Length: 276
Ligand SMILES: [Zn+2]
Ligand SMILES: [Zn+2]
Image (cartoon, rainbow, N blue to C red; front, side, top):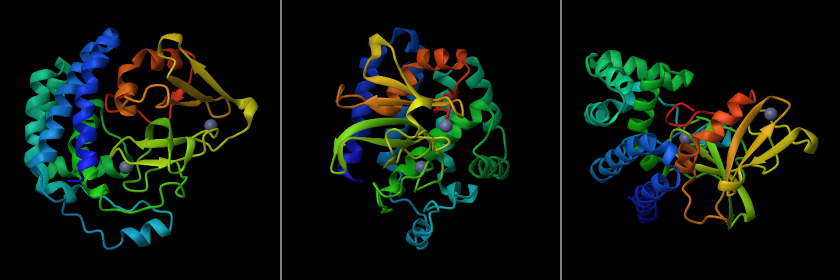
């Protein structure tokens, strides 16, 4: 595995410990996230090279389609890891998670794979299944994405160039692509790509007077970008203000920002692992 990416996920586990202290209101969710991350990091160590056929990946990307056209069956070799995840989640999750995990554990292989198929095609499932499928598929696609090349600053679409899912969070960073560039992070495979900073990720609106930004003073390295035209929002984590931030984790930790946005009637562009 690419050493940089390996370090990145190991680092994420350390960041969670800091976030638990900083955001006590999200401690339970973060403790569960920690449990999921431990599982994922252990899978990343053991899973070996992913087995996806990437022969059409370049051609698909050139046509503006995501590199992978995923089917439930692609994940059949990794079903043993799902069993492991469900067991772990039952132990450290809430009662609702325990019940959902136990329901999935009692299904036949074929039934699970057809639920996964439905999820991959429609990007929808009940809350617990969605969380379990994302947490399970994430490390497999994370490794696969290392072998897919795409133009990081030329893709500019609002869906992932690797798996086609939508981003659940975005961030600002100085990089080879420029200063204060905005990246989107895929909700399923954690791939990052550049997107216009001032543009709504949902509808493409970039009129100044209908894009608003909201900041909480205690978490001023994160702002909400809200589009008044379509009513959607996304968080923007400024890595120039907090270089240790891990965008997908900061998103989970700042659940109060989502509650605030939902009360105002705004809808998130894509839910995170925990369904908000
Ligand atoms: Zn993706
Ligand atoms: Zn919009």
